[in-house]
Length: 198
Image (cartoon, rainbow, N blue to C red; front, top):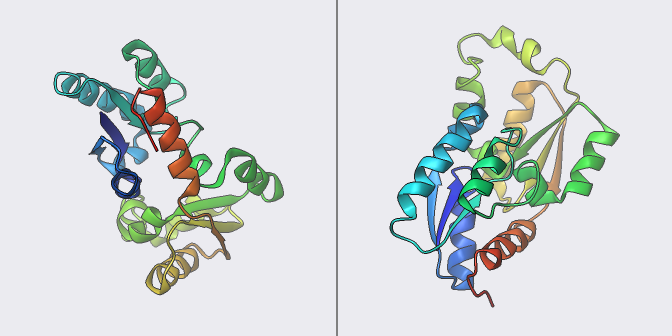
C-alpha cells in the first residue's frame, strides 16, 4: 500500500508504519502545502493517480486540512480512505479535546512538533515576519495563547516552543498528546484500505 502523507506528519507516520511492520510505503507531499490548502486536493490527486500504477492500494494521511471538502471529493472519486478529522490537530489530540481548547479560549493558536521545529521557516518566513515584524499584531493580535500538542517533547523542542510563543507574544500551554491518536487513526485508515494490521 502507498500512503500519501502530509509532509508535516510524514515522519511520525513512517515510524509508526515501521514499528507496526505494516506493508505500507509513505510518500510525503511538501508540508508548505498547509499554507496553500487550495492546492492540497490537486496534489493528492496527481500523486494518487501516479501511485495507483505501482500499488494495489493508496491511502491519504491528511485530514481535511482546510480544503473545505475538496480533498473528500478527490478521495470519494478515487476510492481513497483518508484520516478522520478537520486537521491533524484532531488526529493528535482528538476532536472533542481540541474543540474544548477552542471553547475555553477561542484565541488559541496550535502547534505540533513539526510546526515547532520548522517555525522559523513555515510561520515566520512564510508570513514575512522576519522582514516585517510589525505584521505580528496583524496576524496574531486576536490570539490569546499558544497550545503545543507535544508528540515527542524533549529539551530542545521545549526550548523552541517557548521561543515560538515568545516571538508571538503569547503564553504557551503544553499538552503531551504523544502519538497514540495518530497511530490509532493510521491503523483505521490502513485497515479500511484492506491491509492487515496487528
